[in-house]
Image (tube, rainbow, N blue to C red):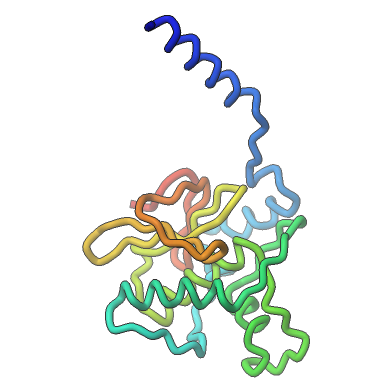
Length: 186
């Protein structure tokens, strides 16, 4: 029995080793994104401004949930094959044509735009501290990591409109104050 378990484990491990894995560093445009983050923060993407969105809720958690659903409801998913990340203020201008008068606004983006805008809303509209919310990007998908006031970690995925408990995976983690590779800043 033990030999069978070892054999099955080895077969599964060999599939993982042989299966192609997509990394952010292999995507088109990644070097430009990495250069923007190398200064130690992601303020080029998570832009400090007040976004004119009324965030409903009486508690921080209710506001986090509302903001997650708001981003999902207001951005149309468009695949980004060139891997260009749009800053949160630029993405918001794509949604709200009244904010800057851009009549060609599309409100479209992919997972990075969803996550970057949500992180900005949580930081600047809800007031979540920088050590409690950040974008976690793996090169395949981007979500937002949120740590509640009680210390519980939540993965917020505004692209797919879900919230689930636990730590978010990601080789890159950043917000407007810090950026790190392969782990949180504390």
